[in-house]
Image (tube, rainbow, N blue to C red):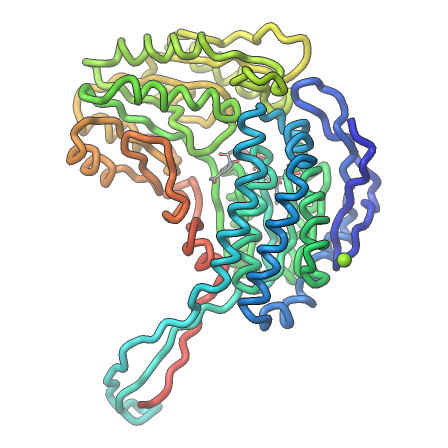
Length: 486
Ligand code: NAP
Ligand code: MG
């Protein structure tokens, strides 16, 4: 419990919500963490207006200036890490390990990365080209440059799983490129995001360049998506909400970056190193209780190792300590809310009704409070089982057997999603061949480790566009061609 006052940030002013405030609940203890501001529609409009007003001057600042401000923000974030980690942990239910290593330090890194990003070249020279005469102009040798220009005002709408990391991943590259932003975090856990807003204001970003609005319902996000002051929507969240955003944004021809749902396939071949493979897949449970879009939650195991994979995962599930996120040895914390726990439990039940075999978990763990689901393993699933096709966003792994490579690829490609898949095989030639047949934006070969400079995003219903490293700078810019004779 904290008595701190969490504020909106609109045009450089930290203000209370005109709609009052609402309680943020700790998912482990079910007690109130603090009160989040309830922004009125007038405040959301004011934030969009402020971002639009600030854009012309901000877009003309020197890269060095934007870089220095991003570095300053990273410094201040680091200074307030000890305050931010417990706050983000209380509102998300993240375990000690996830909160201390992933939630806050990752934000600092992202700001440092895009402080460097602000200095990356935005002009690309093209070789002169010989152009024939037309009715419009004389022929001749024409020179050209392609210049990256900021898009304008970017509405950044984020999910609940990694609230400030997700925010940093959007506003870092957006600000580096000279855009102005309005951040709308998820309703469940916006408190650290409001502190982040305070830090950015203190770092010296000019009024209106960064705005933060929060609220308990979809109205603030909907208003931003519909606003004619907003030029781009950068959204991370579920596929149905992404679809709704795309429809509305299309009317105003807004630029879109959509990072949506996933159902990561992990194809395990007979020759895979099973210790590494099982450890990697078991990280689904340990990594924020499976509330992560990229995880290998859908194991597709070749018959020769199928039994060993299931037995290995069952043993791993049984070893993971579930409970109080503050306890050092806890590996699996709660889900964000009772609503999310109920969704996950219902899909587990459907998966079993449709022929899946419950090998581990499935029952509520013995905790007095909190929205917990035990690490759950459902094996022997048919590829058409709802538990194989739909996203859990919880600590559940499903297993489907396969016989040959083509079948594995077909099963892996058999969901509407295409965000992140994995191939486990000692034969790296085969792993690469299979990876290239997967209709997915990202593939891990024998690892769940990422390369943050690689482009990140989804095929199919997992989204539109890419960020990550310099690709993030491209995502928040428009290409302009400038052409001249000679
Ligand atoms: P969500 O329900 O889609 O909500 C995400 C955000 O959208 C929230 O801020 C939400 O606020 C807002 N929102 C809802 N309806 C809206 C509308 N019509 N217009 C504008 N904004 C709207 O997602 P979540 O439950 O927080 O997060 C879980 C989902 O995120 C999973 O599907 C997961 O796969 C996905 N995810 C994807 C990635 C990726 O990189 N691809 C990363 C993390 C998570 P309100 O609830 O107040 O409306
Ligand atoms: Mg100020």
